[in-house]
Amino acid sequence: MMTFSVAFWGVRGSIACPTPRHMRYGGNTSCVAVTCGDRQLIFDAGTGIRELGHHMNLAGVRTATLLLSHTHWDHIVGFPFFSPAFRRGNRFEVLAGHLIASGGIRRVIDRQMQAPTFPVPLEAMNAEMTFDDFAAGDTLMLGPDIRVRTLPLNHPDGATGYRIDHAGRSVAYITDTEHRPDGPDQNVLALMDGVDLAIYDSTYTDDEYPAKAGWGHSTWQEGVRLARMAGARRLAIFHHDPDHEDDFMDRVGAAAAVMWPGAFVAREGLVVDLLTDSFHDLPR
Image (cartoon, rainbow, N blue to C red; front, side, top):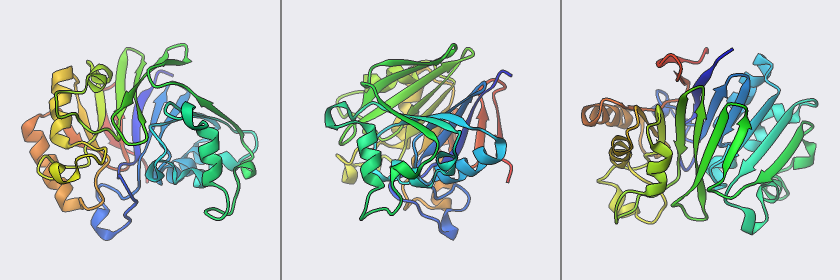
């Protein structure tokens, strides 16, 4: 069956914030599932991957490729709670593009699950697990019609941006990157070029950014500027600051729609169908 869809399971940045003031947009950290036909791609393993795992168990999804933007806590903290990885007979590949020079992705995930910071070791995961490193800038073929272009992003300790082309449509996943003061980031523009959907690190507003310069994040206004410059069709404002509660995000959404009608605020449970150009919510 021809499918190309994007489901948001975690849209928050920095730290999970499960409070009554974060209900409409969600408090889980980054996790986005991209379904390409019968192939499941997962981008980042923030706390949102826990609920995605339950959904995969119920749906009988037993294989997936997890592609990490980077390995700061908020993007990997959910990995030990990804229940499909504990099921014998399942198969998962974990990929990262920023760690070749520092020991590789398996080493980072393994150390995350060692005492004294976690009681269950990586070896307790009964699924068949493979860990592979690539260099940001490589192009990955994850299926006959699934082309994933990668480029490095501007973030402390390194990060990787992704562009997925499938079935004549495209989506870019570009989070944890700081825009450049000397002009548009050419890597970001290349990944966004003509995409149907660009998912972009919009942690701050332009007014907030000067006090956060050097922290490795961008603004929703810069996301709009880049998306328009790149000819993207839509922009998902993503990686919301934990201090940006629901009412604040309502105001961001309204202001973004005025600045550019193609922009919207990502929220947990939202699904974008790239083939039908439609939105719907995940079943509760």
